[in-house]
Image (cartoon, rainbow, N blue to C red; front, side):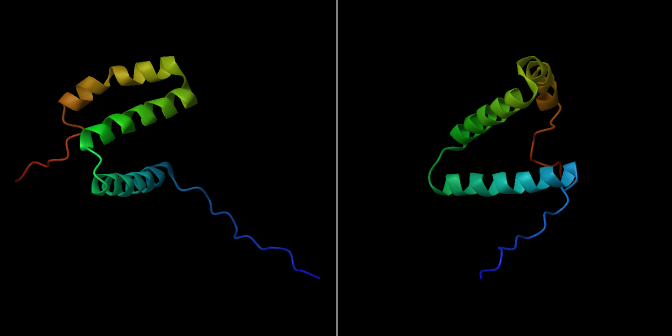
Length: 88
């Protein structure tokens, strides 16, 4: 008689900020691999933005995402997405 398969117990979901950090790590790895394979950074950025916006639209709807993206230009201008840190 065979024994039933055992499955690991599901972990509690990570807090939102930890999920975002984990997701960013996965994306950074995928980005680095694509760059290593010769994919241009601009193409990666545009494809990533498309995929991200498509996911948000499927989750929240077009109107909510349109409202969210209205504030992006000010956030970009304020340096929120700039990776270069000011040197002290």
